[in-house]
Image (cartoon, rainbow, N blue to C red; front, side):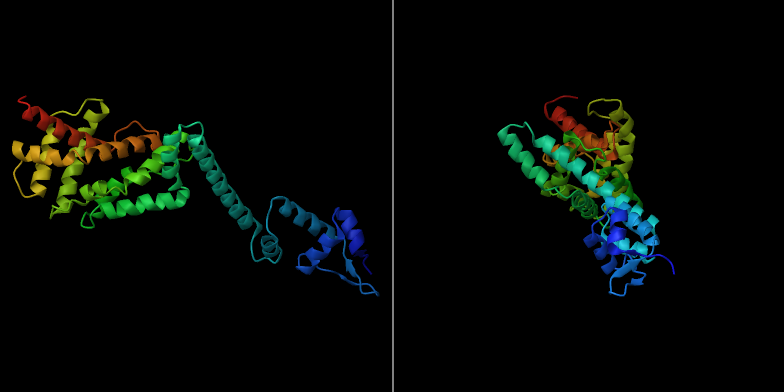
Length: 302
């Protein structure tokens, strides 16, 4: 008959306590070969390798429940390790975000720290914050705008959360999160006074694309063909003519919203670590160009 070991002998060889070995047996991880005449558990030598395997998995902080699934063949070991790797990466990401948040709050003046604390507290859950921004842009762009235009807008407007967060990027991301809740920001993009929103958005995107090389060159907001296309699109959207009086009227409206636009795209560039203009930053440049033009005309300039 094959030699068997008592629970004490097996525990000693494995370097574990009898209590631990008994627990593994009780939960089904360590089958017994039989019992002695006195009713004590006996184990085959193969049980030692099983115990070592269990110890290796436990050293990775894997749960007993997961190990049981692997032992029963319910869960392949490769799948378990892949799942644990994914979870670990997620936790590391949360810790890096937390560290950057704490650094942003560290050594910060009192009043400024309180504002930052309120701002950052709203993005304590990064997945939730990312979902909030995506959901907001889903509401911002009118439903009548074709999907391809919506995708073009959101692709450049919704950044991925910072993968290597710094105090600067977590603050910028928190600012984006706050800006998409501003009523003026939401109202502008909803274009409530425009019937054909699809045409308006298509023309505004075209104008923004025309302005992008000028914005990339670092030129200040100024008159250009892209500005003409932008103003004409806005006028057609409201069913009126593109006249100096109309431009002055709409420029006055834009003055309350353009700071929000500018802030959003500035914060976006910090989050993405990109200095390249987006359609949004080009759009803001055109709005500022229209305001600059109206001020020049109003003061008697050319």
